[in-house]
Image (cartoon, rainbow, N blue to C red; front, side, top):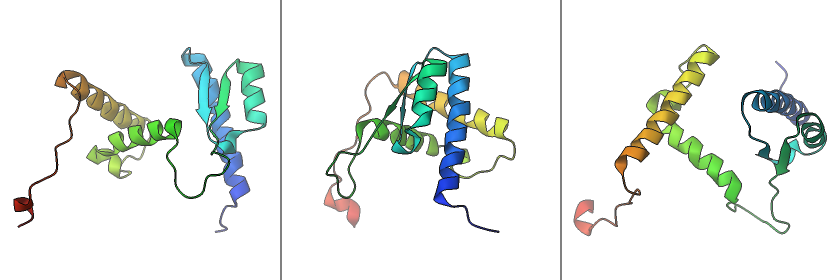
Length: 134
């Protein structure tokens, strides 16, 4: 089996993005979407002209070297990390996409309910005393 080139993966991602944006347009009133630099170009103009959705590209700062946290990207990474705390989503157990989607929705609802019913902001425990290490 031949490995996929970077260009072919980008084309697949953009094709998936058009389907996603079309579904977004048909099902909800969201009209601003943040995307990675790989989605810039024709997708942005197509979404603006055809769907009236603004696709904002989150780019790296000009002089960035190494790892740096980007505010908009961090929101997505954090949300995915919260979902991965549910054991069933940590591995790909599901065979059918609708079942996988249902499990993801279940995990998101469970996380939101836990946060709502807590009644106060989450608090991190302080540093442990040295006795814990022994």
